Image 1 (cartoon, helix red, strand yellow):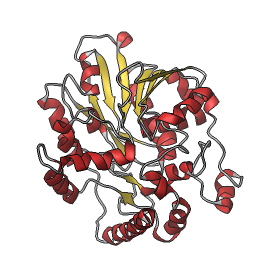
Image 2 (image 1 turned 90 degrees about the vertical axis):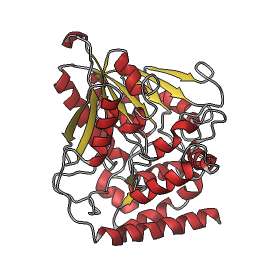
Image 3 (image 1 turned 90 degrees about the horizontal axis):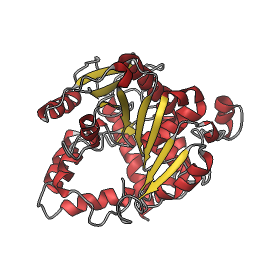
Image 4 (image 1 turned 135 degrees about the vertical axis):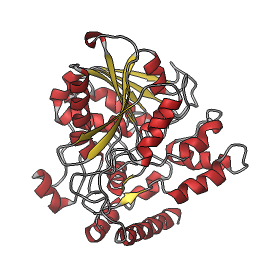
Length: 381
């Protein structure tokens, strides 16, 4: 019954978005949008330098990349460059929200790294294209597959060019790891550009996933048919209404705040005693940062096909057009030769069980979990 109402609600949401799109005007690219200015102001207020960069992908998406330059006098030869990628529904602000001495971006900057924070297509900071309007269904016709073959290589090449480096460190969280597997398996030449990949809550094989995502996955094939008539659309954008609601319900010391954490935990897993309530409202002012519904459907298709990690399944006949076969091919994980460290939370319902299968397919891989790091109840989501 719950799954049924979730399905109906999502269909209604799609129609609302499509109708709303009729009244949205085509946007003109502005390099300093409000969301990018918020990131810039936050970094500078904390006493760090900031640079805003824009990277255009081969298929025309314009991505915002935020940089916290190395403040030391490190030479180009000794410069340590790191690219950090957020997870599903996240953005670069995820790595800044808890401030200096706690947030990963600041910690790495303090340690002398040249820090670059990526923003995937369709997120709050990267809703731009060279010729497509964000109200166009074509703009939202992408999943994490396109992020892997277009977004990630564009950002990596741009950063290496700007810094004069041949390699960089890569940190990916959740979907940020999925993109990496796609890129380095399908374009193995990029393995040589990675010094080390640190995979936080890695996601590839999703057949194990529980929580709210599993009942929704039962309708994945229905969603594919639905899109033939409506086109793809944006999902879970951080609107002003959502910001207002989260401010009312999730602010510090309000009795409804645990409800906010409950909703997050139902998706990613429960973390008893590990919730940072002091920053929960701040985080929810920037999250969710939006995505294409096709991203969610792609993950849902993986849930319904356990043991497989492969491109988007368009259906038997359309697959012949895209892949020259009835089912999509597996991503060739054995071609990933970059050194990888996997960090997983044992209570993470999105990532934990699939790590073992990842390890068996990655030639240079080390696994780390809370038994070696923190506590057995910690959840990275």
